[in-house]
Length: 140
Image (tube, rainbow, N blue to C red; front, side, top):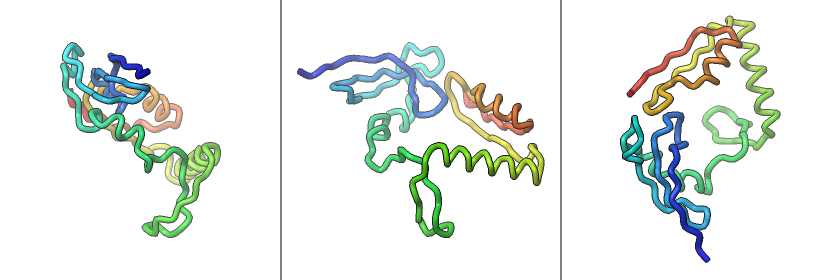
């Protein structure tokens, strides 16, 4: 028996958190529409949000970290563990900080929606790292 339901939520396609209504059948999104009652987005959904199920279930979607094993542009990659990936990123950030200072690291983000660039995790990371360099382009 097919289970069907309507789910009122926010889009998870980016950090904008636009109001979304999902029609779900057998745990698969079959229709997406913007929520006209959402106080900021008022029914608007971008193409990325409308393609939520296509993106979520795409067979070529990356599900594991990859590390380049060839020269840049060769397209040669190897799957690595999440621990290896986070260790390598942390090592590279530490190297940049040591060689050039924390201010050599910057984050730029821009989007519309509920959060509009105010993601606290990004700010907390930059603060703890020691960089004041954040650019937020608000599109409210």
